[in-house]
Structures are given as C-alpha cells and as structure tokens.
Image 1 (cartoon, one colour):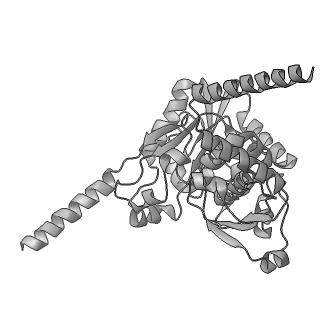
Image 2: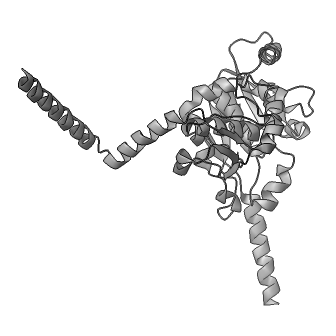
Image 3: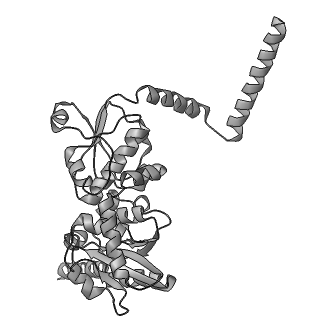
Length: 345
C-alpha cells in the first residue's frame, strides 16, 4: 500500500511539473522573472505594516491630487503604509473624503526620511523602491502611476455631500426648463501660463480657435450641450468663447472663483474641455466622459518635453486638438531673419 501511494504521488507530482512547464512555455513567461516576482510578493506581504511612506505637498489643487494618488499607488505597490502631511490634508480634505492617515508635523521632523525623487510618469524602478521611511518628491501627475487602481483613486476623491449638493443645484438652476441637456465643463487656464509657456517652455496656451473647435465638437454630437466655463481669466473667456447660441454659462459672477468650487462644478458635468494644466487633467479623469485637450502645444525642441509626456498625461481615449504654434514659429522665423541680417551687415 505504501509503495502504491509513493508511486502515485510521484506520478502526480511529475504530471503537475509537466503542466507547470507547459504553462510557462505556452504563455512565453520568463521563469526567473516569475520566481522573482513570487518572492517579491511574499516579502511585500511580510513587510506590509512596517514603516511610513509620504509625499511632498507642493503646488496647487491638481498637483496635490497627483501627489496623493501617486503616493497611494506606489506605497500599495511596494507594500508600505501611506501617510500624508498636514498641508496636503488641509487642502484636500476641504473637498474630498480622503482616507489616508495624517502625520503630525512633530513626527515628520523627527524621522530620517529617504527622499526619493519621481519623474512625472511611471517607471518600472518605482515598483521596487527600498526603504521603510520614504518621502516621495516631485510633481507626479500621470495616470500611469495609478490607473490600474482607478476605482480606488476615484473613491479617495469622493466629494463631500454638501459640495455635491451645491454643484448639482447650480447645474439644475442653469438647466432651467431645457430637456436632454448635456453638461460640458470647460476649464480655461491662463494667468501666469500666458507668459510662462512662450518664454520658458517654447509653447502656447489655448486660443480662441481651439475653444471654437472643442465646443463645436460637442455641438455637432449632442442635441442640447450646455457649456459651463470656469477660468482664472473670465473676462478673456467672455470675449473669446462664442456664445451666439446662448449655450455657454460663465460660472459664478464672471470673476475667478475658488479652485475648490470651480473644480467641483466641472467634475459634476458629463464631459470635459480642458486647456492646459493638472487642474483640467483631474477634472477629465474624475468626470470619466469624453475629454478634449490641447495637444502638441510646445515646439519640438522645448525643454518641457524632458519633464512631460503627452502620452503619459492624457488617456488614450481622450481627444487631442493640436495647438496653433504659428505665433511661435513666426517669431522664431523673424528672429532668424533678423540675426542673419545683423551678421550680413
């Protein structure tokens, strides 16, 4: 009986071994990588509760959301507990029901952190970051960090009930008696970008032509679109966004609203038109409808492309409308002509 059991066990193990090797071969898997990943998974589970990971809190609302989501994703990926700093909590908790615990400033000051710099998009090396006390540093804002856990990120950025109520009440008010309305949130980012993009990054921001193309897209596709515009330069918007059909609402009193109020209002629309910046990117990500964005808005030799990738910032299903770079190209051509004239004379 014992011999029969022994040989039956051997045959079973041999069969399982052949099946396992066939599976690896059939799916073209790397055995070393498979075993290394398996070992890494065991290590992560055993160190799940050790240490503290956090992230810097710099920039405005869109930057803070990007940092929060990246911390959440990378800490989970590396098997560590994530904590946020008080400044981040003070800003985001006004709007969202965020759930990551907050580090007291005294605790922050007494820990010897490993400061780990991040680029703006996901890299394979970030899956294996060493250290129990890690402070992630940078301005990450790319779905490539956290899109694989999108539902969890959206849950973290759940609006407070009173914000939902205020935003929906505003939309109902401007809807009036109209039926089958499709709300399209429009965020026009200008302000310091008017100077920063051409002078620092060799780029442009959204112009009148872009906004006309973007709004026409929704006018041609939907029966009754209603555009809800927010901006930090509402006067410019009133002069450059075509409202001849009466389908554009300049949110609030026509002046720059609070970032939180504007963001919530746009995020409760059905679709999004963004121009430039992380604020608009996050609106589109939370809304989940169709998103139109300004693409190709810097020259090919722009230093901006060393720290930014279009394909890592905008989801593949989003619709890009190329920017009009002619003002920069004409200026460049004029400078080259003038330089040639000086050399010649």
